[in-house]
Length: 278
Image (cartoon, rainbow, N blue to C red):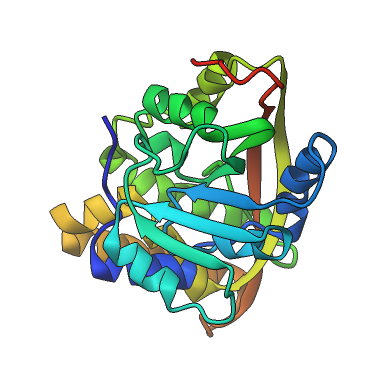
């Protein structure tokens, strides 16, 4: 069963505004893996569970055509507002039924979304549509984040942890204690002999304190908390922001900190044989 937790218009708007985009460093891991296994030109990349398109547009310079697919029309509306990428398009649809012919896609990606899919059905579809020597790249990041600012980074990171702990009871049971185990299970299930697991990819994102709060509020657990207990959710956000500012010794929520995010990535290459199924 696929989970659909990002479809409200306000949530989609916050997602577009505050969610971090995969950096060039992270995308280069995927592209380097593909370039070592498949000759150019790269014709088609399909980004599944694309949300508001932050990761999708990062692929645009490297493919003749990039298509983002998502079940949420609200998320796709946000994605389509991004100008300047004539080779990028979006379409609505589920991850478990991809509208492409067998062996027609150079790269299938999913960036911070695979854990919401029916993973067995999605993996079968990804295997089916990939070209021989085409690649699969599934990317996500942990909620174990650090906040760096001056000499108080350790205290700020603890406040960050308390924020996430505050809405942990509202976290989807699909994720369990953490989504990384779903990706490790997927890694084991992929029937390709050429596959790699990369983790502990640490990336620093400069953002204001207010943007960090917006980022945390975009998580599905917080959104569920907000829908069930609006006053409690807003109190958690206000209290977290105030604690961060007091610890930093500043008053402006536009003060910039470095938020350190840890990624992990599953990479796999389809062999020349074109009859594999999961």
